[in-house]
Image 1 (cartoon, rainbow, N blue to C red):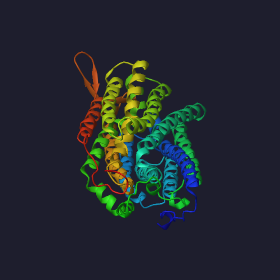
Image 2: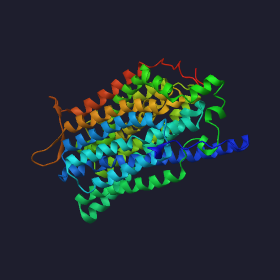
Image 3: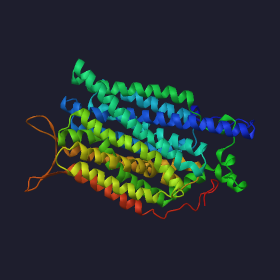
Length: 466
């Protein structure tokens, strides 16, 4: 475990002007490598989404097996988020970040060899835990390198990595699959999707190892709290380094846990689209795989923009408050899902509009409910712990979604094609149960988020907060 110990501090030997220049240079490099590195975590994770329909129709795995595998991954991710969040506060985040992506890439590569379903569940569980190391490392890095006044801004920029990773995963995996299918058949197509994603992951491991840095102190710089004037006296200095106290505040703050619950309901609807969105459009509305992937990718592109702007707007316009934007985004989330799922006929313009609304919502909610609102409620030294609690709630919800969604998908006994279970009314309109489930979870997320509207952090010391 000493391999993951924080990089040792070096004496400060630079002039104030040099310190300022080095902070600016390393911050730009740090946020760039976090953005790209975490996007490649997503590429490894989402290979399943683009390959799901082909695997089912090729008989490689049943829809329920895939649903259970997805749940295993997300439950491991939830446990890992909590564990890795607490560990990241005390770790060398460069090494932890690179190692997590390396294990994830190995797991992704192995799936392409068509392992038995039980082994696949174990492999994807391991992948889920490895994946969980990514965001805590990035959030701890943000806390170590940036002051509180710009935390939301750079958190929002980093949050674009989710959408960037989704876009890369959907587009690259779909293109690889289509090309390989035309040359070697559909069975090799879904395998190549996993191998291609793993290749991107291994490239990310090299880049993280070369360009990421652990902490300002390890680079011969003062801590960001000292440099930005957030430490006022000896009491603040002690509190700013008291990891145990900060993590205790995170564990006992009810608002942090409520953010986690709201995020769990949100992730049920978000991962519904990530895991099953292409499948839903193919099965219910008859789109070709490439068209369905293009429509779903829209939400990733729009979400990247809204993620970046959410932190800036909340910092500059709402003075650090996240609640107003979270409410607007929650309503947009419900509208976007309803447009896509309740309109019974294919209309590319309506479905595209739905994904624009959904993407705007996801970019904001992923930034806020995914961790930023929880991090705002605790001292800087417990940023990883707060993210871990929020992430655990988020991905337990996502894991439940995967199993339930897989259960609500069937396979036609005559044609062998995938179908959606549902109820047909007397007027001929069919309401599938997936739509009811996904939209209902989005509504519950909005209601839970409203309970922390006035939550503040009166206990955090040593980070300039009141």
